[in-house]
Length: 353
Image (cartoon, rainbow, N blue to C red; front, side, top):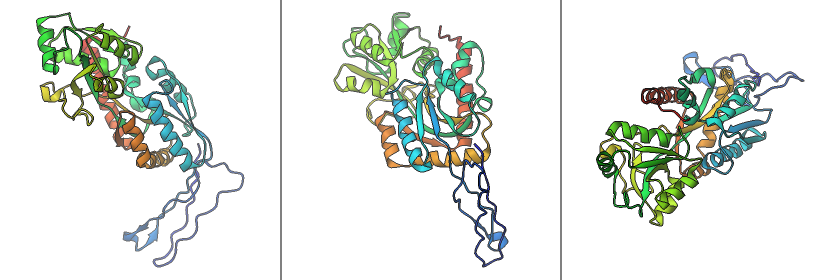
């Protein structure tokens, strides 16, 4: 994308600001339209330059997950809002696989003009750590705004003879210590945050439990209910229907606070495991080295979409919690989160093969 600036000259105090210069005929612009012109009190009412900005090309958002899931649903809701705001088509393209690196590679090879964006999550930033590498956030992406975070719920089958009587994480730890290598826990895929938080639970409490990776949550939940695996740390959308039916029993919440839909279930922190805060998050990014003016324009539109009640409702309905961070704050958080979990993966020598 290109950005064209229309810079009016300053006017004397008390005068109206001159109209912005019009773009030259035939020049393509990415951003044109009217931006607010602010008066500087220190200059006695002199006018700052105004920058005209609108979009003139379609935008696509790459989603590294299959269609129909929570992340896809949220991305499509944001795309619909952005399309109405910028007056251009905003298309969601699903590019699942390889922990999001397929979508990431495609975005990185796209022009740094703001027309190709991506929904980035921790599963993508942590993927290199399993191969002894590090994800350099600033070299790989340009942060545009955090959208949501997500808590996880540790559940077991109410009919499991080993675990059905357990009521909390303390019960899990006590049984696992007395019976090493007996208990098992599922993950929707190796290397997911549910997998990593359980590995940290094992490490913190000094437990020996066996990880059973699955290809998605549905089969893991079915095997959990049947007692073929003992525990599953998963998002609430995958487990809540079965919790309501009494087939699954929640034992702990991985998050800073309790889950609103399960207020009676304590967090891991409340049960003495302070380090078990999941780094589940997702936000919008663009290719590296996006021009600052493009970042500002996109971030403003993303924030406006995030603030709408309909988008907030869609986030909550998909089991996510609205959590906006500005581009700068998102960058800082992702860098810290990636470093923390990458260090843990390396220290514990966790692999996904």
